[in-house]
Amino acid sequence: MDSPNQIAVFSYGTLQDPEVQKELFNRVLEGQPDRLSGYVLESVNLPDSSFNYITYPIAKPTGNPQDIIEGFVFYLSEHELKITDTYESEAYERVQIKLDSGIEAIVYQTPVR
Image (cartoon, rainbow, N blue to C red; front, side, top):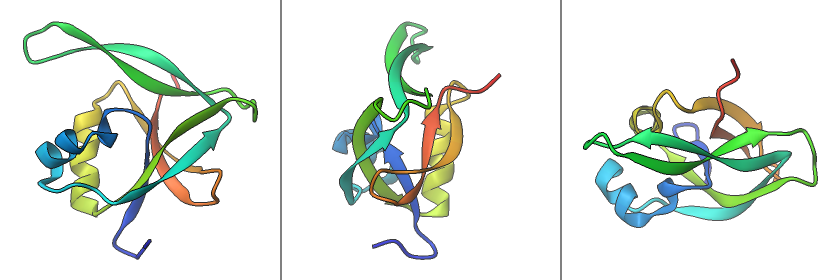
């Protein structure tokens, strides 16, 4: 499934929603369940188009292998990855990780400041 022009992205939040996928990419993504050890989910409040705040999940690295996030790994084109970067906003930092399955993927996590 993984090919040179497909980028693995681990999703634990709204990107798993087929309606969000259709809105962003004009298609429903193919993917499979996976897990990310050494991370927990926290919350981040982000403004919407009406300047109301909505709470979203955000992955935070802990280094503790007993901390696990369940999610899906999806395969995106380079163009779709750029769309995802915009969608995830500056509230998230894109990093390369290894999932429990051994797949090398991108995850959007708490920015390291």
